[in-house]
Amino acid sequence: MFGPKSHLTSRNNHLFMEDVDCFLLARQLGTPLYVTSEKRLRQNIRAYHQAFPKADKYFAVKANGNLTILRIAAQEGMGADVFSAGELSIARNVGIPQDMILYNGNSKSEKDHEMALQAGVRMSVDSREELEHLAGTVQRLDQDHEAEILFRVNPDVSPKTHPKIATGLRSSKFGIPAEQVAETYKRAMDLPGILPVGLHCHIGSQILDTAPFAEAAGKMMDIAAAVVGAGGEIKRIDLGGGLGIQYHPDTPAPSPADLAKAVLPIFGDRCRDLGISPKLILEPGRSIVADTTIMLSGVNVVKRAHVNFVAEDAGFNVLARPMLYDSYHHIIVANKSDEPAAEPYTVVGPICETGDILAKDRQLPKLERGDVLAFLDAGGYGFSMASQYNGQPRPAEILVSGDKADVTRRAEDASALLAGQKIPERLYWQIE
Ligand SMILES: *Cc1c(COP(=O)(O)O)cnc(C)c1O
Image 1 (cartoon, rainbow, N blue to C red):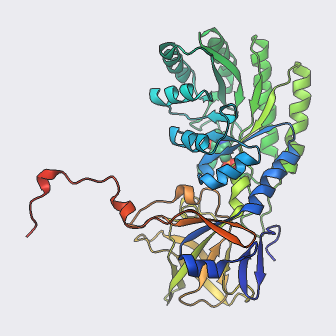
Image 2: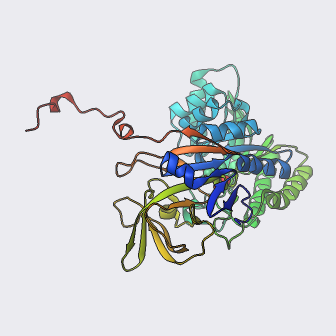
Image 3: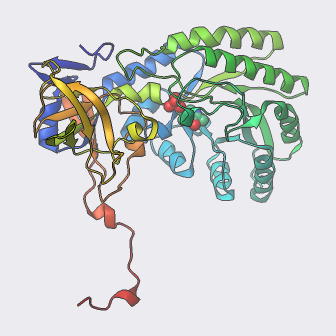
């Protein structure tokens, strides 16, 4: 019923994830709720292994920082792409080996460098300027091993995605301009304590066409050739993440196998020409987790105004993507999953902002208070972007496996809103 999403089915008018009734789960645990299928997660990772048997795959932790999900990714042999000291600690916490972690970032502090060096993970260096800052910290720490680095390259390709998630354009804030890379690589080779081992790029996210990946692979190999020509050694080429997923029933996405078909021949041929055999690395985030997870939310009010508003209990505080990127999340009514669409609804959350709209003009079965909406494909940039805005504690996360449903992160309560805050004592006088 839900296309390729075999973990979701409709049984007797109720949405099931694996063998769990999503409506009953919402009733038992309350909404909003993020619910993930373990089976789907493992399938998605295995599809990458099958398509790229020789590549290392680093899960992009920013897409989903749930420890249980990362633990499963680690069990399935994934490393981690981390973008902050916090994400590094998440990756280390689930047992991902340091050799399988890449510490990224375009704005690392001295403390970030120190942290990465002490953890012994590779870093992706984003600029010539950062290289010099890092060199200073390496000198000061005086470790007994060299710090291995990759260079984040700006390959200047247009991935035809939402402008806010295109990262490989010439104008983007990320990476070193292609023409500066060979020279910067040489400079790194001369710096004591630093060992440049390869090149890294990431051209954007939610990319639905494999052509930009092929173009980026070609450009990366051009840059690799320049580095080799300047006497550098390339042991790793990291092509980043960005493979899109099918959010809308009418916009299919390429599979990891399609990506492999577009990229591997270029990578293989050009490596052979250059006489190098670097390790290929990929950093998928969304295409690993997005479709594993639904977000369940409860309907509070159906208001007949100039349009039909469905006000439910999750707004952009829970799922930010529609507001941030105008993104589409398909909706199934968890307790009316066999019913035909009856009328259009504009689905809004509880946040005190006009822009708090999760779906516009959506054809859905006739809705009423107490219904539960399932927003599909909420596993990537879903919970990880959730906030406490408007005094809203963040929701729970659940892992489903067969007929089991485990809470992997409990819902916050109001105490989470008070945590860490302190009123200065001088303000303790009694309010009349
Ligand atoms: C965000 C990000 C990724 C993951 O992108 P997806 O579109 O989720 O696959 C990979 N690498 C880097 C450097 C990133 O910033």
